[in-house]
Amino acid sequence: MVNNARERERAGDRGCVGVVVLIVPMCICTVQLLYQAIVDVLAQPVTGDNEEECLLNEGSFAIHKDRLRQKACNRLLNPRKLNTHLRSYFQQANIHLVEEHMKALEGLTLNDVVVFVAAFLSRVYVKAFVYGNVPATEAKQYVDYTLSTLKPREVAVLKPYRKAALPACLSRLRVMNFDKTDVNTYLVLVSPLQGTPSHDLRYEVMNEVLESCLQESAFAYLRTRETLGYSVGLYSWSLSSTTGQCGLSLYVSSQANKFDSNVVAGRMYAFWYRIMPYIVFHLKEEAFRTSVEALIAANLLEDATMKVEIDRNLKEIFSDRHVFDRRQRSVEILRQLKLSDVQDFYRETYHNLEKQPSLMIQVDALSDVESTDDASSVDGSAKALKTFDWPLCIVPMSGDQAEAERSAALSVDVREAVLACAPSLITDAAKGDPIPEDKSVEVALPRIVEIPKVRDFKHKVLFAPIGAMNTVDHWRWIGRNEAFRWRPWPGHLLNCRHNREGRRSHGVIVIVDELPQHSLHRGGCHYRRNAVVLDFKEDKKFTIGRTFMPINSEDVVYLQYN
Image 1 (cartoon, rainbow, N blue to C red):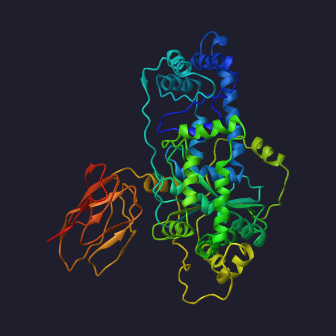
Image 2 (cartoon, helix red, strand yellow; image 1 turned 30 degrees about the vertical axis):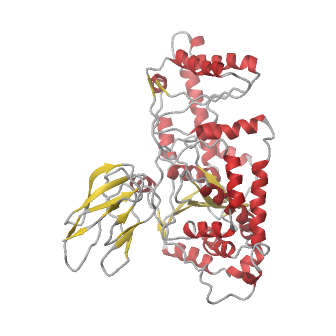
Image 3 (cartoon, helix red, strand yellow; image 1 turned 180 degrees about the vertical axis):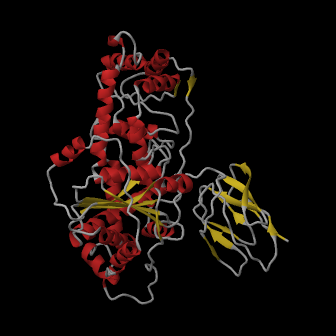
């Protein structure tokens, strides 16, 4: 199968390096012949005088182009897939916005394809995964035949993936569904796990334990109690083939003529920021052990089919952190895991609003149209929209909207909601009258920041180039004007207020791309991993100095005061 969409997503691509995935499942005696035939097709000329030996002509190119447009239209008219597109756009640097994609498709010519194919095949990086009763010498023949047939001039350089630098707040975007006759809405609250990617598998394991403990409660609250929509839930995710990040997401698929999106968003905030902490910090040991044992049992299961085994190993092949004994190592971690470990992990990550970023993407719809369950209506809309013009319609966040979301979140009685959606998970003490001195689960809603321009947010915040000047006001005083703490966006220069009894200061300050929060104080700044040294000038601006890597966690950069 060539260019399978699911496998392209799994493989990802790095920078401007495109990806072609060939999957050839077949009997061992004929699989090599079929693979060679597919590679021979890739080596065929795109155009030429002999149409039988060429891949495309003007007529077939126009058909393929229109087919791609129709396929894109069908995806864009689906609010869930539009939401997925926006999440991918924000999480991966190489994803283009739908408007840019459609405009590029509109202007695409057959000559552009000819130029692209020649450039693409001139620089390739081949990664082969041959599975079955095949000796190493025969497996290498697949790579050798690919290189000898395509004749690339050089090996493509795979660039490392950049991790999106979400600020430590709740970044919110609301757009309108492209299909004006569809009342369906789709809201997703994305929370990436800080500290990932990591070579420590405990991060991913504890993330899966949280998902296992909370998944049924999320469904019971959002679907059964609040009846917000027909498809709701909480799930863990991992970008193993790209940035390596993992995290948790909460989603609700609702209908605008039944529930206002402000209410839906508010109830999602209520579960994530108020109900979920109550469950985690009052979780019964028996409920925790049940979830852990279920995960252990799942990891100990043998692969049902060879395809399941291939897919599991293929995921590791495309990952930058190959862990082929992942299931065995996960079982070892699970057997040693304690409830207090997961609670501490949750407290230091998702529950810590000072450093935990979140992203809320809402695909809204008009509420004054009739709902329809006819699947053909979507296809009909796609056929009617003979256009490449797909501008996003961003809904600005008004004060009334923000207040409505906040009210919907704070009006929920947490204890009553927990008793309704998770009575078997919490301790008996948590079911009784609230304890006044219990401060462990108190949490305020995060600061909500609107995303007014999606391109600016991506290119100036999430993936800002190193050295790009920007003013950031993400700091707060932690002493008597002696020090400050901030959470910089990696690669940004900061404007900073500094006042130490009128004295001037000089020295060096470090921005690190791995730590979500850093302290700078009179004794020094502890840091690790990749860092950029900045000079603190009298004009209160930071300017780029030299770059060095790696840096040990024991290293310290001290501020010097005049």
